[in-house]
Length: 289
Image 1 (cartoon, rainbow, N blue to C red):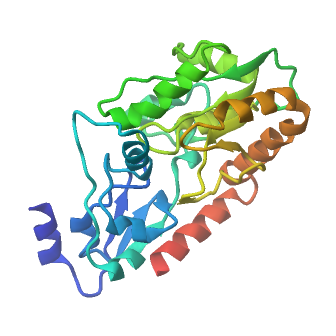
Image 2 (cartoon, one colour):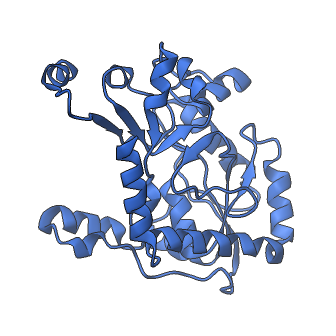
Image 3 (cartoon, rainbow, N blue to C red):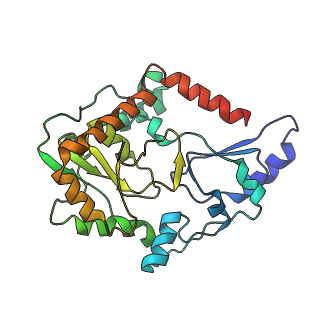
């Protein structure tokens, strides 16, 4: 009904843009895609032809776990496929959650902003921990593993089991977790409902080296995920997970540079001198398309 109202009231001189705020690269809302001029999404599959397929679990990685390991969802969901290839050009990468505040008190500031509407509460944190800080812990990976769909939780459950001989992965209170993160050399950040995770940006802020499932299928802006430059990747099937982790643990002095690069990149886009201009330029490019 909502889409019908939009169609009836759409002006010929008005460019209609739909902003998909989902935190994953899948699940294109095909009803909207068919009649809007532009479809914005924070993270898009590099191979847009994948949207012409229906993915088990609604995501490329959940579809992978169904095919590779025959993981079955009790609450089955399939993404809708795009029928007309010409519609794919409407899908544009806008900006991702990394531009939000992910500092220690971000959850409090967001709540206060919803009440008082003061811009002060949406400023990004100025508190960072340098990667060259003396770090007493090797790894931080405090993750939840309970999701409504088994294909989403599969990766996290398997990583938790693989890490049993190294660390405890059960969740902590936010302040304890961030304190642990600021004292850790490496931060492991699996996929959740989406590929991007707030933990990625908490890792950058706290100066740890980000270790994450391969992000090469994803196009996003800003691009935080440059292999061996801003993060260390491992394969989705997790076969090389322990090998890569062990190598990283033995070579922290070498890989510390990755944490430095990632933090610099994060600061550049969130509070650098050019950050506002970069966002404005991105926005103008998007609305002109």
